[in-house]
Image (tube, rainbow, N blue to C red):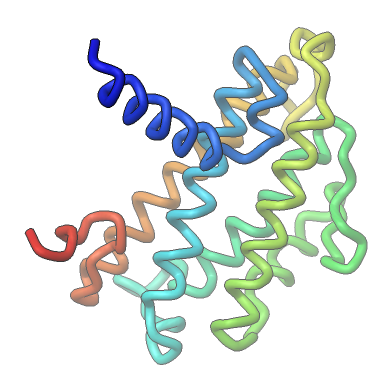
Length: 191
């Protein structure tokens, strides 16, 4: 391999490593993989939320479904709720009480401006990420109760990540129904 090629590969590798958040670099195994996945969904959801205009926050595809704003606040509420099942309490400022489901509904149905919704979503991802970083691998086989079901901490974390992907897909469909192309799906400039 030529020196120039090696140098180019070294630069690309350094760039890729620097783009991975430091917490995920510190974790190996399943939790490290899940954290990297959550970080990716976080970036995509916040970027997509910023693309959807404020006047579309109340848009819903049909009666009886969540609006754009409600989906985003639902994600935020669950980013606080789900870690509670493994012992990481929600931020008290949210008013979310894991023992009282009505507090989730109240949180999700607040009528707040678009930028406040995005800020809430962003903060909730920081909470979720910190919660995941704080769960040691030694607890992954520990059994906890989630909505009346016994499951491992590992399964709770996998379900949490899967839940995020479910709603990322929902938000992509909502955006495209409003002629909004997700930023990461747009052709690169000059192509």
